[in-house]
Image 1 (cartoon, rainbow, N blue to C red):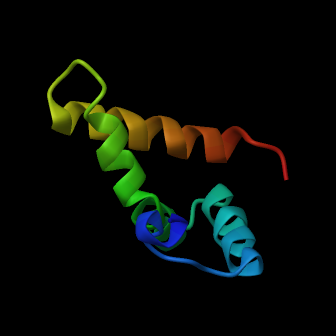
Image 2: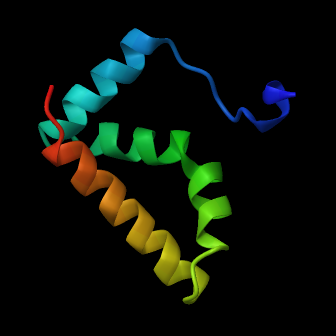
Image 3: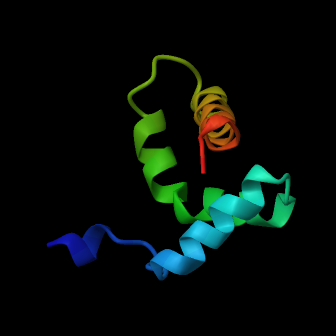
Length: 72
């Protein structure tokens, strides 16, 4: 059942490396993280009462801000 919802699976160590790089303003890592969560972002944007593009932008912005502010 879960496999149907999974978009891409990466090892934990690779995910942690992406997070660490994104915290240090590595734009490529940020893009990879957004791509990993793309399906979730699109699905969630449908529940926000604003134009979908604006909702997606807001979700991505808050996601990246959360990553930058989180502790190691």
